[in-house]
Length: 225
Image (cartoon, rainbow, N blue to C red):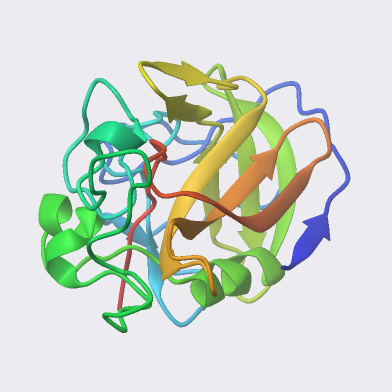
């Protein structure tokens, strides 16, 4: 598990360019000059390009939709009892992405980013998330009234914004103002009922990877070649 701590920076005002997200606001950040391409993805000089917005969002600061890992549409209740790949009964088992089928990461038909946004897109791997975390300088800030993390690429100066999202457990979202949770496409090593996620911790100024229940509702930030 990789953990990277960052100094919390209080920014009184920030205006960014939002392209491909129904916004035409422009300005300058104290993080760096904004260098976002005029398209639906930002090139941070990494192995993949990252979507400007979360899956299901219209603007960079919007949370978008929540998905259980391996499910391709949002729902009202995120529970093990209605999870797509869980059996019923007192000791539920995973019917896909388990110890027997050899699938360590999501196949395209179970990847919400691919299904919702098109086959060009997919959910990022934990290695790609690690690459993003390691190769950006991060600041915690309030953008358009939404708290989140802004990362400025150490390679080319482009910027990505990840809003806090909370997590959907059961029928309600929790921790929306203090935490962000984003899925990777990877199953947890040795624990098939868990998948790897990235956690944004506002109070600690921390981004880290952890493993958690697959049936929880998390947000997704897509990538493409």
